[in-house]
Image (cartoon, rainbow, N blue to C red):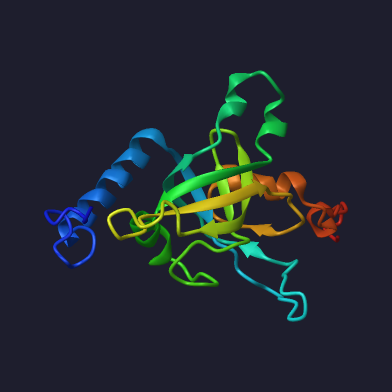
Length: 192
């Protein structure tokens, strides 16, 4: 059986208007069913060229964007919530990511979310680190790829600098920091 010629007129699947409508519906669905999440792009400070890591990374901006959390069974209360949310998947619309984050910041790899960037989920007061960015799923519905699926894991703070201007996020820096210079004692004569 041949493909439907009313939807595929020899130019691939769907017209540009149909693709835009499909993307608009996905964005609307994410706004209805999703949560506001802060995307914190990583700024490299001292990258180890051999291993490709940067232990002195800093996060100096946060961008609010709606995302859908695909794994939410931890809210049922049957088990400890901290164990249930070690690994999960967030879905974000590509166009919304470009509008909210990509045009407003310098990313390590421009045009998409980066592995190593952080998501702050205010509902759980939790940080998640992006481990992998899946951009081929769902596979070419109407001939385009409208979303990113972000495979994330719970982020373990290790003295990275958080200076986003948002109190809830920056307080984690103060709460978990092991930087001894933050805890210097000032003597009565004003010397440190």
